[in-house]
Image 1: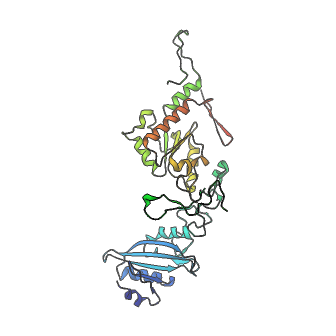
Image 2: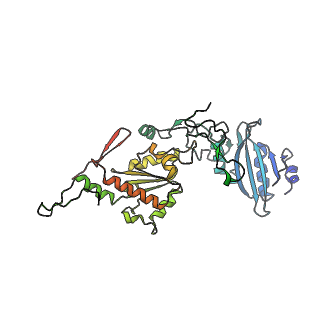
Image 3: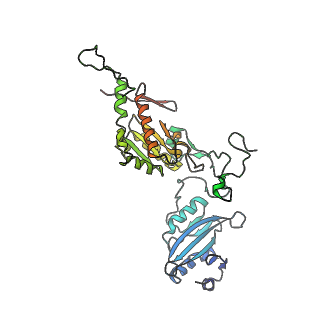
Length: 195
Length: 177
């Protein structure tokens, strides 16, 4: 499928000139129609992936990226959707496999999928107050009570920030055999607090 | 048997063996540990290998793995304990009958391991009392067997046999004769 096919049908779509596969940005209002068009008329019958993404410097902070595969034509297409007001229409009705992917994107980023049949969290427990993959969420976590109040009462345990010991740790670049992952900022650790 | 308090006193006629009740109870318990495999991650694979013929955990009398907490007395926590799973681990521990022991198998169960993150409990000893910690990521079956033999040693030497404490609370086991 070449880019003109989709653009002629959806003039509002934007060709992002993907290097590895045709890539388009479509409006949320066009998403269901575009996915249905690609599935029914262009043969993109497999939803390979659906993930949330965050761009902190863009006016719409969150978005969703879909990868669709044509099992007959053996080609991919990628769709970007901006989550205006953190909302995106759910494609679960067209691709049932999107169900858990959308739940994960909601869990991790807080993107609400309108029309989702089962809009619960999937990884963190129900009632967890944060969306951990947002860039303003610290990797170590934020202290909240344990999900089970009776277990918390017996053990005195909370969900507490993990000790990072100067981390998070990143690979040093270059050959992995010549260096081990270390903290970007090594000026502080558990003995020496951050300035 | 070497370090237990059994002794045959030939001065006592009638072939009577004198010992402490603790020693007998502990000896019996140490040779019939029924593990509850709490397999949460890759450590569980090594735990399964320990049960197989090559490493053969039954040599030490603990091959009777029970997947029901009510029929087990040693929970082997093998793997990463997330905060979401912590509740389940604690509830299963609570369902096990006294006396009971807990083995933290591997780095994750002992300290959180490499998972320094918002989702992972930093050591299962935050929610249940742990008797033996086994290092390794994951530990080899030999390390698990070594840890279980350490646990047997600990059971054999438990004084006052039937009392355990956890965070200031004493849990007492009564012998019903």
